[in-house]
Image (cartoon, rainbow over all chains, first blue to last red; front, side):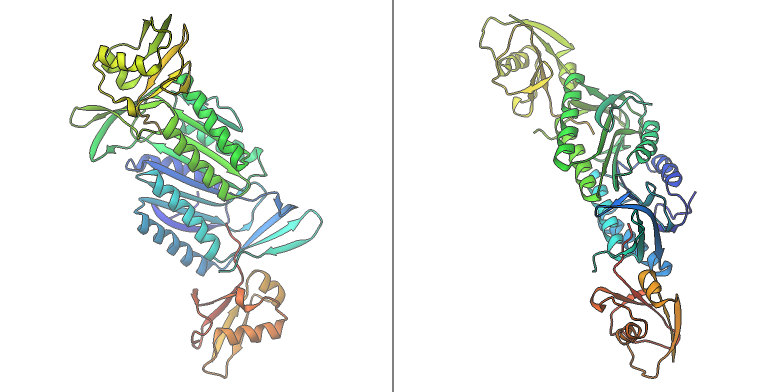
Length: 150
Length: 150
Length: 81
Length: 81
C-alpha cells in the first residue's frame, strides 16, 4: 500500500499503483458518504508510441519539485471546484508495459466537478510536474520523450 | 460477478457493482495493452438531496427500453470516439446509501477520448435510460425524483 | 384492437396498477390520446410535455401509429445515474 | 559563490553527470547564463526556449537572482502522466 495523503494529496512512488488504487477506492467510498460522483483516471504504459513498438519504459523524476508542483496542482483544483477528495499518484522508475503510470481519484458532491477536476489535475501534471519518460523500442533504439513545452 | 458484455456493453443489475468494477478494472488492464488512458465514473447514492437527509433509495426500471437505450448510447459513443473499451452498469432496486448506482469504464488510446466518452455516456444515460429514483427522507416523507425532461 | 399500457415509477403509484389492457375503437388512436385518457381515468398530474412515449420497448413520437397487441409505456422524466 | 547544478533525464545523459558544483565570479549571474555556459561546456542541444529553470526545488524565471549554495536545475519539456 502506497502512503498517500488523504483526502487531498499527491505522491510519487516506485511501487505498483493498482493495489493501492483498488484499496483506496473501497476505503474512500466508505468514509465519504457526501460524495455523489467519483471520476478516476488511469494513465497506462502503452505498447506503442507514434507507430513504434515500445518494449520498455522508465520515468525519471526531480522529486523535490515534482512533489511541490503535484501538491500545488491538486490543492488548486480542490479549492477551485470545492472537491472533498482528490488524490494523485505518479509512478517512477521502470514501469512494465500495461501497468499504471499515473492514477487520479476525484470525488465531488456532483459529477460535473469530479469530471472537471480529474481532467484538470492530469492536464496540469502533464504540463508542470518534472517527470521524464525514457522509452526503448522494438528496433533497438531508445529516446527521451519530449513533452509539449509550456 | 455481474455478467456484462465486453469490451463494449451496457447492463442492468440488482447486485452490488463494486466487486465487479474492481475485477473488471484488473482484467481489462491485462487484456488491452493498446489502452493508454482509462476514465471511470462512479455514481453513488448520497445521504443528502437538495438539503434533505436521504435515508433510503430505490430505482425502478423499464428494462426492455433501458437495455436498448443503454446499448445504443454506449455503442454510439464508442463509434464516434473510436474507443476500444466502454462498459456501463446501472444498479436498480434498493441501493444502500454510499453504494454505487452506476459505474462506467472507458478506455482509449489517449486520455482525451476516454474523458469525453465517459462523460458523454453518463450524460446520455441520465437523459434517456428509463430508470427512476424513489427517495425516502429523514422527516418520513418520500418522493419520486423527476429528472430534467428531454 | 387491444393494447397493453404499462406503468412505471410515479405513474404506477398514481394509477394504482402496473399495467392495464385497453380496447381501442379508433384505429387512428395515438399515444397522445392514450395518455390524455389515462390522465383523466387515473388522475395523473404529470403534464404530457415532460413525458415521453414508448411502444414495444422503443421511444416513439406522440403521434405514432398504434397496432393491435402493442405495449405502450409513458416515460416520466428519468432520474437514473 | 558556488552553486550546484543538477541534471535530469536527457540533460543528465548529455552532460554525463547528475550534478556539478560551479564557482561563479559574476554576482549577477542568472540561470540563463548558467544554462548557456552548460550548453557550451557539455554540448547540450536543447534550445533554452523550451527549457525551464528551477532554484531550490521551485520554478523560477530565467533572470532570477542566484545565491551562494543554491541548487539550480534545468527542466526539459516534461513527459510524465
